[in-house]
Length: 326
Image (cartoon, rainbow, N blue to C red; front, side, top):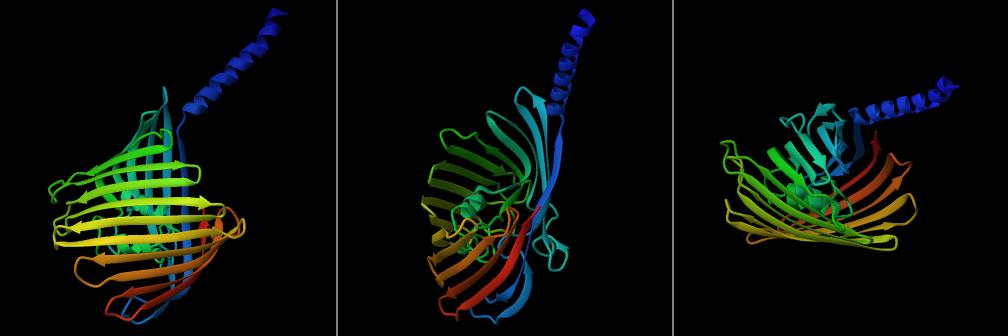
């Protein structure tokens, strides 16, 4: 009888041991996003081009990530992410782009925060995409285009040879510090950022200094951003300044936008952005669109943009496309 009574206890202990072993095991997952569209692209003062393109709303990518429980609340982690151009099957955002250009790092995380080393996405890019209606769209977000493709900020959206620390969330506030070593290729890069989110309100502030790269202009950038939701409508605002020490030209950047959730699946998008350089042509960009989710992983969109540069004829672009996440 005693031996029979011990059997359930032994079985429970065995299950607890197996559960503990499973919790300590590492996990690895594959994921990504494919964005394809057809439409028309036109830069100010240039001819229009009809095209099938990849990544107009979100740059297509795929990745691998993993995590291992080291015990006592400490985790080891890694991320490897590669951009891709699905219209041609080519890797990277452009010819010559490094293969793991999105993120490529290893790190440690516990209740004191997360530390990663390798190639990390910059805080300025993350804040810029969070506080505008078109997210990280290089095709149609005035904010993304003005900071990262219009000759203002330098240093790319990710820094190689970098160390990044992200604090735990404290009362809705998160701090980030990041640096990229020069390694004999000019000076180093540095960045500090803070983000606050509670309920319908979100605020952000980022400062970065780029000196790394013998052929890269030295720039200092700061940006303040905020958003607030009024029921189904979320409003966005950004204001920033870029000081290009190499050329001696300063830029002031202003962005305003709104996303209106018309139905549970569909949202109307509106964003305006302007670059005012100390000298040279002013740039104003207007984008409108509609995004509709067919499921949690798949959405379709229709967007249009007017891009105006002082002294040049306007460029008009539009796209109809779909995104699928896996």
